[in-house]
Image (cartoon, rainbow, N blue to C red):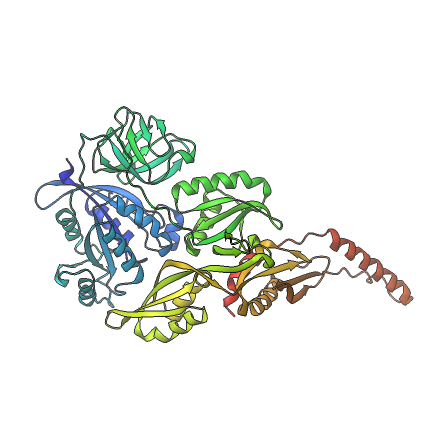
Length: 599
């Protein structure tokens, strides 16, 4: 019976206490015993615990006997709060009927709170507002409750006030879920249709699909079909998350669980696919998801060329677990064979780099991130390029268009000036402002994505003492005076160090980059010239001095001609070495392009 099933998720801004609330709900319902309890149970990755953020959406089933005497099955999906993982949130929302909107009693409404709320409203979910951390000395629960009531309508007295850490009013949250979240619609008698909202790879059970059964039922002993790929397979097991994986014989309509397919190739099971039964298939698949557009692109190269195929396997398995990651093979003259990968943001890229190194034990080298540009050529052809190395010759280019974003910054009013200064310095344009709450202002800007991905978020946090929050969406492509900034090491262009910059910044950025590279590129036994070139001319140059062996050490006294002879011999050797010498460029040098705005 679907009457006693409730599917809901928790949405909030990063660090507002989602994972802690999930812990208390699991503890209160007895899903996890006190002995097995750890902090952030659903954040199973080491990275999630270290950084204190949820990266992956994770599902769990709880059994709860409500005050009305009925037993309910509650399926909770815990979602990330960071802006870079918004796609995880959008997928989780499709599998639910309700959402707990958690707001920090000290911080109030922030940018990601609004972004996630609008996503939930678009998905037609029942919203239950919850104010967390009411036991902190600086908490302002009544004030924040008024703000939330003004935002979503309703009465401030109806907003739940809890402390997830100390367990205050946790039962009220569960009662509200039971009372206010509608049961799932779906009949067991119809042909089976289950939406794959997430997946991961297990070396024993193959691809494990996380599913929400919309109609019909999935049995463990029946052959299933993945409708998008047409693959038919008999599952190894069907089960639920309680919170570890627990096999069951049947998943019926409205339930959330997993299907261990046994598939060893990750291409056969994709997020957004529909699973049905072979002997009674559904007529059409469920709508699925829109695919997110990558915003930031970077090259990923194995440090050891022999690891290339291992890196490809690692990226394929990560893509299964994180559907917003895209990649394709590319070659760099400076570094060799690797992949061009697309990410939703800089934090997303950092997480992928750490997961490759930790989970797959690979040494990789990431190039400086860039964005996707549109290039209009003389033949009226529009090229999409996500690497400066792909930019055609200047004589063939009519104009270069770069992606612009709309950004919302929510901040206390006292930081109005520093934020305005930061955005205008980054070529941003002010559009409008609103006051969602007293003493808080929402500033709306338009800004080039290239200026946003570098260190904008860090600068924003430092200028506002950590109080400002940021959300962004793609706006459009706009033409501007852009040109390629190329770096030559020993007269050889290093494609991985190239960047596309605005004309007015080219000279300054070229100089800063050369100064940084001079310190980062290790000294060789020969002199290394580093040059920055833009618009067809060299705009800056520096030399990395050679390491010298003192060949005159054995000459004490004697004729000067003997010393000159030894020095000439050394000079010839250096010249020959420079012709065949190979300059190793460290990872720090590729990331130096990132830090150009710091000076």
